[in-house]
Length: 260
Ligand code: SF4
Ligand code: SF4
Image 1 (cartoon, rainbow, N blue to C red):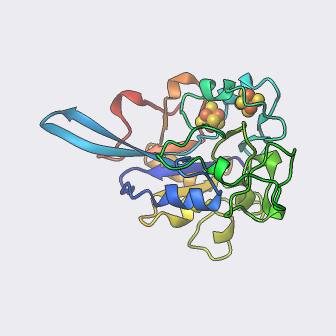
Image 2 (cartoon, helix red, strand yellow):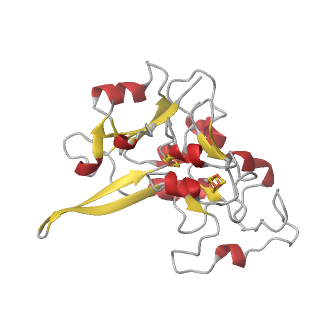
Image 3 (spheres, rainbow, N blue to C red):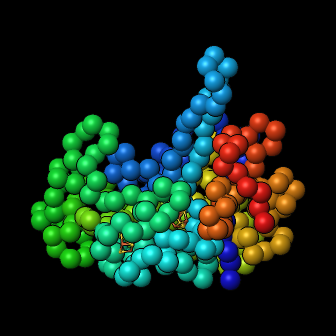
């Protein structure tokens, strides 16, 4: 079985947030709901400061604390390494949001954070475009994926109200990839459509996606040869997202523990 993982080279990342936009478009998220965030922060003391940034998807942890606390087994870790939320089972209790040390989960009914209208109220269901699932939990944004492409069991598409959502590693793309592929390289036309949208769109090529269980994968080689590190490793979640920091990387210095 594959164990899909991501490597992000912080020396290449320019903080352009194209990954954030591509993710929002690919996954039909609400304005302000960023499954793939880029966090900006300042290091140093004024006037000797530096602006830095940090791209942060769901880590699809090997030992995910979000799974352990979910009382309905809505959040699961599957055999290919994805951590996913089944929106039919999620009761919106927020336990997983509290348990996740990386703050990557979103509650699907949160008031808008961007100052605009409440999109879910703007586009109620009941006008002939009702999505799959229980009536009353649905809403109907005009940009919704076709119903046939939505997959509530894996947290893909326009989720119902009052559930938790998060990055799926583009499960709907990656799960269709040919079996046995070591890396999903977007420069290969045969693999591009199966590669996560954030990886495809990253202009400086700072993101890599591949099979951590395959010793020949480029992601494994990068982690080994360029000293890949995991964020907040002291919590024991064992993220499947690794960062390459090089000389000038921007992982906050007090938050990094070397990989075990
Ligand atoms: S980053 Fe958070 S939400 Fe993602 S798998 Fe790890 S604990 Fe779960
Ligand atoms: S909010 Fe949903 S996914 Fe999260 S712990 Fe509760 S039931 Fe599970």
